[in-house]
Image 1 (cartoon, rainbow, N blue to C red):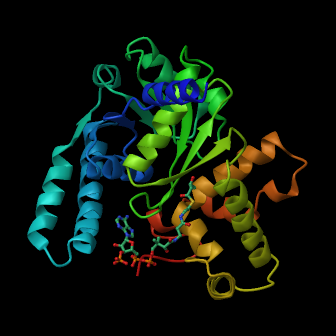
Image 2: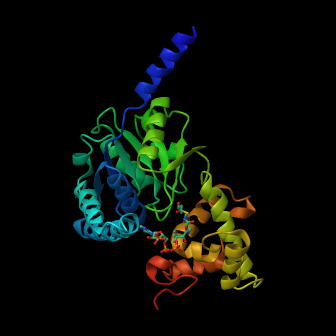
Image 3: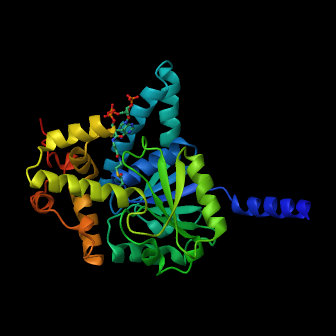
Length: 308
Ligand code: 3HC
């Protein structure tokens, strides 16, 4: 009996471990480019899809800068190996503006586009009948429900959340989010892929913010509220959390780093869904900066000024 159990377990493991090799990343922004880079760095073939060539050119440049940073660090003593690493990684990345065209032979489609449910629906609907049956669909959403995104597809068993962290090449965590329909095979494949790309995976149910953002976003908002009340200056709040709690960045500078638009969007979305939760209350200074297009590091100004 024990022997049979072992055989069955081994058999199911071998089904579960259908390796992900060809990946399509939709969205070439900060997260999409980081995900594409990390996947290519670890030997996967990656196609990045964007809406136009100009954005793809920017994505390519940002990957080149970031991969060179990694090469400099990893191949400090052997710059020639570093150059080889860069050129081999870049050779595994291609780009396209035609999503249905490039999903024909891929194992995983991972979207990292704008946080808009109907746009995400359109995206997955456009490829659901075109992509091979084996293809897993995943979303890198930071705040929307994976179940709601998956609802328009006929492959909910092959659908999950894969939530990465900024900067993707540096942050070691990957949250793998299961919806009730996600099959064990899909889940196992994604956990194996997380390992293959050098990340440590944790599993979470499809709950708002998963683990990290559910804890981090209220922390950022609470820091902003502290500042709004005049209890401490932004700089002192940041120093306090760096030196007093060992965080690599203080919460105000982290909000700037994540993007004030993103932080505000997450907070507002949760507040609309859960108006009774005081942790999700919008912050007026955050809303003001966003309305002035001061999004933090990426726009050159947020709570701090980065233009100097
Ligand atoms: N690409 C490649 N390498 C990078 C990089 C990038 N984009 N950014 C930083 N690095 C590397 C650098 O090469 C450097 O390596 P080295 O130390 O060997 O030279 C190392 O990372 C540290 O970078 P820096 O020296 O420039 O700066 P810091 O030491 O201050 O570290 C940081 C920068 C890694 C961003 C650190 O401050 C940090 O960990 N901050 C917290 C980030 C965080 O919390 N991220 C999660 C945000 S939440 C999120 O993303 C979820 C979303 O849904 C909102």
